[in-house]
Length: 464
Image (cartoon, rainbow, N blue to C red):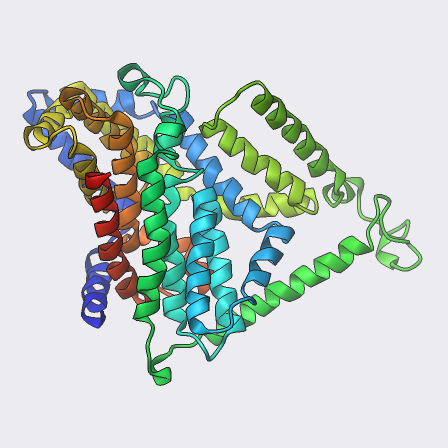
């Protein structure tokens, strides 16, 4: 385990630049291969520029998923529930199992929500069980649970292909989530991961108490500061009415020093509450009319939940602002992925790559090779939606040529994207920022989970 940790740490520290640098090299590589297809450089640049803005709607959808999931995890009821959960385990084994399972549940709901919720739980586990757990392993356990996100409620690929008029609708039509997220193959793989991943993490724990690494004191102090701040907000909410506190008890609210109406409106509960209730009514009507789960309604449901659970408008706006900072990579990189797709489509490179997969695949093995290729590509394109924009047309064309199951092939690629996130630092950033560790602290553990989960997922796609 230590040898694997050293290898991946060395690679991460010395050779792993920001995802945008990866994107630069991929763009150049695709540009060169595009010219090898017979197109001139000016023509290839034209394909790149014409495709650059083809995925703006999808970019906004994925951005909202991350931002609204972040905001939901930071609403007081959800935050308090996550912290209370950390007090339930009684020993290190229970802490590890509980941490990975709560991350799996939260990530299945939404990857944006899961990254934040899982980080909060891991941090609270470290605080509550100080001196009794190996904190890097607890944080690694939390991130390991992230592997299930693309088979869940926020899975970019299955939700996108279940949405009317998605960009591949002409090739594969609309594929409902019953054939992807809720297929027997996906559910069996999920069940296996729920059992095997926690077990593997438990077996990694140090047996010698002297080898345990405790949570950093700075993280403990920060967590305690957040707790005191939330308690202060609760006291303010308990004493607050729509008219505000009694001016005689609070000189700041006297006639001379009373906050302006704009500030008081931001602190009132009824604004987000009414908007959330309106959204809830729409969802009820949508479901009653036979509406199905797809990308837009999933995004809308997170917005509604956040509005219903937030104490006031200002709190929600601050959470959205913090969440938007975590989505900067998506906002910047997705248009470049669209440009890459433009080159691949315009030059015929998609057809060439599809023919390559067809040459050694069969209808029954293509989902497995989609999983392997998806895992490799994810190391360079660490975004499920962006990867689907580039690789989805390739695999769907290969599936059509072989007569393979398009839904299962799409899920194979989705599993591959989630799989190698375990050794891709891009999505660890928000979790590690909250947990107070670095990638080198958890890489050895997540690398071993990569191996274990790869056998489970790959075997499931071949056998089931």
